[in-house]
Amino acid sequence: MLENLKKNKEMQFWKPTYSWYAKVFGTVFILLSISFFVLNIVLKPYMRTINPELTPWLNNKKMSNNNNG
Image (cartoon, rainbow, N blue to C red):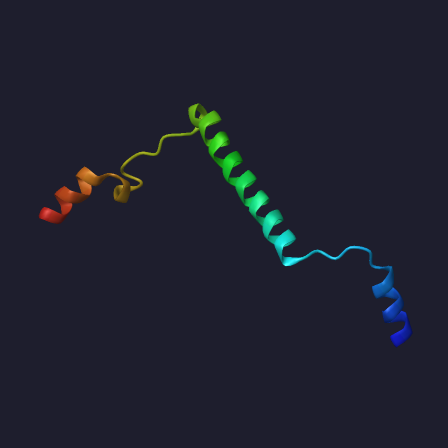
């Protein structure tokens, strides 16, 4: 059994390092971030508007009036 493990290690011609993982993770993160913002800009006309009554925490004027009494 140990001989098979040694043979498998010898047959392995490439093993990713931590720096390779960091580069791949960074690349994926940057591409996802860029695609998110590009899609947000491109699809902005198709986004629906939400009524302030449904989300009172987004309407700052209404919230400040309610807190004052």
